Length: 179
Image 1: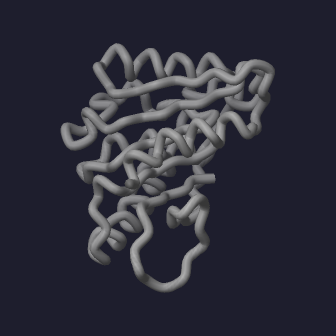
Image 2: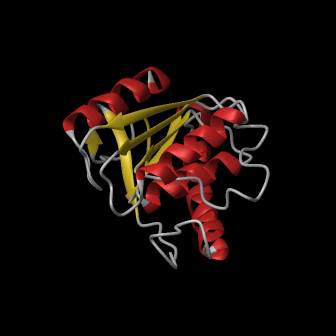
Image 3: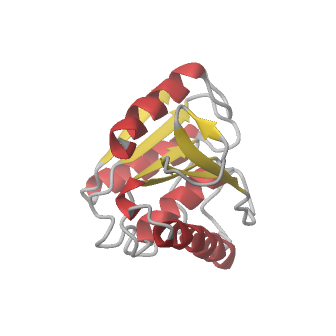
């Protein structure tokens, strides 16, 4: 699952979470193996997901939403797609990746000049048996080594799911961006 949120504007009614507009997107690509999630990646599927999210973002920008007030985030594959958005030429307000990882991590650059300083929140349970904690943490380390503005939250005993503390961390992270 991938989601996109921004500060609300007076427009047609939309679902709301904590006063912010959000849209749930179905961004999927093939994963050849859960043991080596970054081996044999579906590069074309990932790029198509990125193009799709960029198209939605451009529509929001055309409707008057500043790009720097747009947060793209996701869970699992959606988290990977959210991190793909670091490669976009559209400067975003922030990226949130829950139980995600950097796809196509061997393809440089990992982030565009426009998103070199975009705030990134990565959250991962250390008992995740679907997207191994190591994949998420290694992605965080890679971003850190490249000078990205990234923080990482570890949730003890959490599997491939979410918890209230994680939701609170996300809300605390995105609120200043969307204010």
